[in-house]
Length: 488
Ligand SMILES: Cc1cc2nc3c(=O)[nH]c(=O)nc-3n(C[C@H](O)[C@H](O)[C@H](O)COP(=O)(O)OP(=O)(O)OC[C@H]3O[C@@H](n4cnc5c(N)ncnc54)[C@H](O)[C@@H]3O)c2cc1C
Image 1 (cartoon, rainbow, N blue to C red):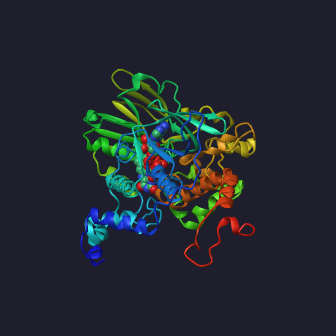
Image 2 (tube, protein in one colour; image 1 turned 90 degrees about the vertical axis):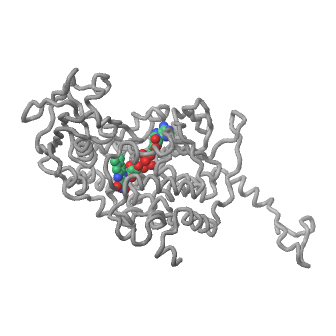
Image 3 (cartoon, protein in one colour; image 1 turned 90 degrees about the horizontal axis):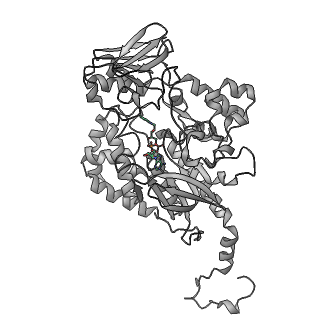
């Protein structure tokens, strides 16, 4: 132990310690879910987890810990390309403080701190300001390896349909699998898609925009923007980090525009990041949950001060507040942007406008979406009309499962668990940001565990009746079954 505190034991030693801790926790426990054969003659999966980013891998590991082991975790991207960290995230460090836990599911030797100290020692940990973006990815992949979670990279979910009381999933490989439960851990846009503001002359589907108008969470060739003038719609974290990345790559100018008169000042979600709020929000009645999140959505969240410090020192950067865009016209040589104050000419524009939650946009679950209950269905038309964004959030059950707009029409919706950002109105931020994960993942897994057990209860009870255990065989008091009285 002295080594751990003062020295730098290295990742292999950290892995040995973590594996030993897992063994002490009897991980992995035996599978308890009875085998079921599907219409294709193959064993039905108990859970198919879609997405192996932070939420998907944590949910997958949590299922294994629960003894639900007949699962598959699929990930459409290549290894080390899961999630935003090594793809579309363009900040050097995480916003979150370094001490955050979550993907470790409460095992100390699997925390980010354990991973970091193993390589940099206790002194290195003390010196660390915030987590480097790619360190977070490497840490997640390390946890995945140590807990022996099998992940199938380069395999996507294409669609899911009902098949009796099962779900039939078609994968990008052409394989068709039957599963009892589906967990959609498909990321921040997993309940909708990119938000593209509507302008009279702009169509995001028009191929002419390629290379000139980008959503900030798309692939962008920043080197190609050297010497260019860039307009950015948005002033929140991703807008600013993209502007900074472009300027650092040699762009001449990057101007971030906002409708609002100044940056949002207070990160409200930080203030409610404590167990009572995180655990309790999903237990509240509809009025409270609606009140909390319609407020959160309207309040917005300031960009991290580190991102603002990064960009404000770069020559060529400017904020234009209180200057909304009215139109965006892309042509062969650049982009004309009409604002409320001017007509500007840019070489390229970025839309730092985030995501929409709108399950109707998810092709994977198109067979089900017509009957998905939304928050708008649970509120009065006046409230839904006044909060159009919030009204589109799915109204989930207590285990993150989709619920029915018209009860009885598509009961299989209850087997589809939305473990992504679309769950915030129903559950709070338990399946998106790091701090909520330690509450969200166990809640999801307990719900799945309970539902699988309940569905098979007759079989479990029958097994209990038939159970034989020669506990007393080594003693003088063992009685063979045929000689016992009653059920004993
Ligand atoms: C730029 C950025 C910075 C962030 N910084 C922080 C921070 O500092 N602190 C914090 O708490 N949170 C932060 N977040 C929020 C959150 O932690 C991340 O978004 C995190 O990645 C969420 O994990 P996830 O598993 O839900 O989604 P992801 O990590 O995006 O994983 C989803 C995975 O699903 C896969 N997938 C999608 N569709 C399919 C399909 N059909 N089939 C198979 N696979 C599919 C994707 O390829 C992806 O790998 C940040 C988010 C972004 C975008």
